[in-house]
Image (cartoon, rainbow, N blue to C red; front, side):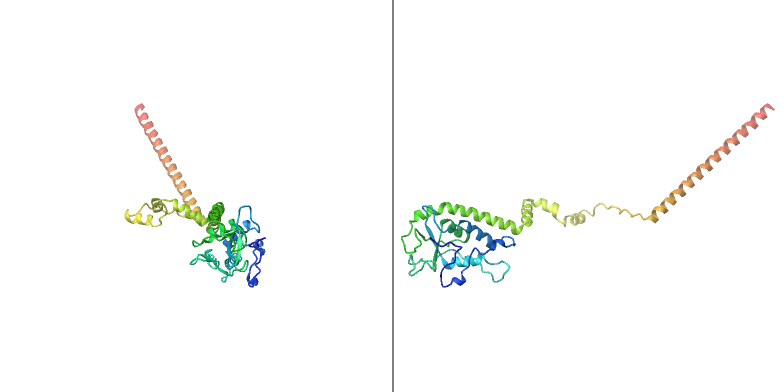
Length: 272
């Protein structure tokens, strides 16, 4: 039975190895790339293979670096950084095109299933390094044929690409939040719309070019004193108007009476 990624390797550097299942799930902090990578890999990590699958051997040094990274804290300035590409240079000599000598299982290399290897390759790349696949956890056993390796990684590779893309989109959306939505909305706006509707210098420029725009008289605020004085002025105007009406009516009455008097005198003269 092969050791899983969550088990601790029995090596001289055992004290430096980290256990993936150390209770990070109880953390109340929002999800980070470290946590999401860890959760994604642990979903597919296994101690046994399915039928027609082989072990893909990975450097123990690289796996320890990845474990330290996913268990680190983003708020810690000394937190481990992301490991580099999955090259397996300590296992395979590219110049001589052969595996290196005297390597020990668990101490120097460990095995992962095809899906976990595909996730690592999608997340970090391989720098064109060929995968090291064996039917057993023995680096020096008969290698798996390249055609079988390609067939074994075809479906896991497509699945890994989809899962990693989804994870990156979720992280991007979480980090940017509403800012990302605002940016996408602004990208949809045309240049003309931005100039005419969003340019804060448009109105002052048009005011200069066209010689000023319409002006509006500011409405005066009415106080209680102004209100009472206004009422007094209205009452005075009403009184004056009433006086003028009365004086006009009295003058009309006088004129009417004088006309009647003159008519009576004329009539009396004619009869007399």
